[in-house]
Length: 308
Image 1: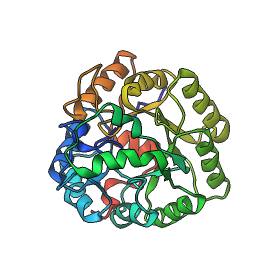
Image 2: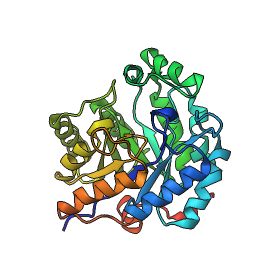
Image 3: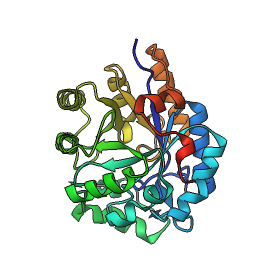
């Protein structure tokens, strides 16, 4: 019998800037409500960043996270997954602070350094609400998202001490081999939650062959010791989800990854995207995982063992 499908919802994040959509959650209250609504719609996991409520700038200030994580935990049973990615402009010391201090069940971990090009969006969006936004996008022409072996080891060890497990974000085949390196060293143990990411300029593309290649590589490296999930950026979000689900994959949606709900239609809520992907999965006769089922599949420590 197949395992149920885990839906992750990435509620807000550093990839997009606020004025690209008026519906992107910015304040703590907005992020809290969006996360709770996503879980009610069928997400077992909510992946969370924080933003400065004054100007929407991505922030890894743990106090901004404290403004919503405790309330989310009290209002629903969804698994809270905190970013250690933050933004390419941040240091690793800044990026790990929310997960280090709040000790969530799950945290994201980028598995390699890479070019992370968002500058093509400047050709699509002409007006910005805050001065930093256009400069941020332009700056991605000449930025490397730094995730060295030392960076990864630091996050693994420091956050792992508190029982936090990881969503390993792999943007290309080399990232899977980097993860295998840490498995070989005994710093990571299964079940591994591997999020293969498609459609970011600087990472692997969105062709069906790309999906199959990442899955074959993960199968060969990790056997039955991993839980596979996919993230498709932008317009690729739902096609990637459907393609991977047909191969036994789990899925991630949310306004961090795509602002859209169908061609030309801005998604008004994260829950709208969760509902859409849930309908796709259920029309494929697939069961949707509850938070409790996802905790068991990923061997998480439980929502009562976090520090918020």
